[in-house]
Image (cartoon, rainbow, N blue to C red; front, side, top):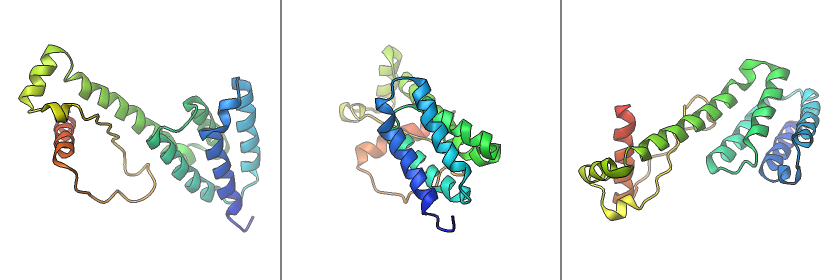
Length: 175
C-alpha cells in the first residue's frame, strides 16, 4: 500500500459507479451491497486521506454538474465512510451536500421573487430586459472550506450575463 494508486483507483471506481453503474441496479439492497463491497476494500487502505482527496474531487464534480445517478446512495456512502473513520473525515463531504441544498433553496427563493404580477413589477423595477429575463441563471453558493481546489479566477462575462449575476448578488447580499 505504499503506492497511492489503490486509493485513486478505488475513488475512480466509486465515481464511475455513481455516474453510471447504479442505473442497472433496481433495488436499494443491490446498491447497499455494492457500497458495502467498496467499504470493505476501503478498510484495507492505508492511504485513507489520499482516497478522501480523490473522492472529494470526484464528488464535487458530480454535484456541480448534476451527474450523480442517486443522491441517496451518495449520502449512504458518506454515512458508511463516517462509521469507518468518524465525523471529522466526512464533515467536508457532508458540507458539500449542504451547500448544494442551500443553493437550490436560495435559487428557488430568487426565482420566486420574480414570479406573478408582483414579480413582473419587480422585474421591470430591476431593469430586466426581455433578453436578460430569458437567461437561465443557475447559481451555486459554496463554502470555500468544504470544496477542493482554489477559488476560480474571475472572468469577464458578457454584459447581459453580468447584469444577471449582479442582480443575484444584490438579492443574496440582502438576505
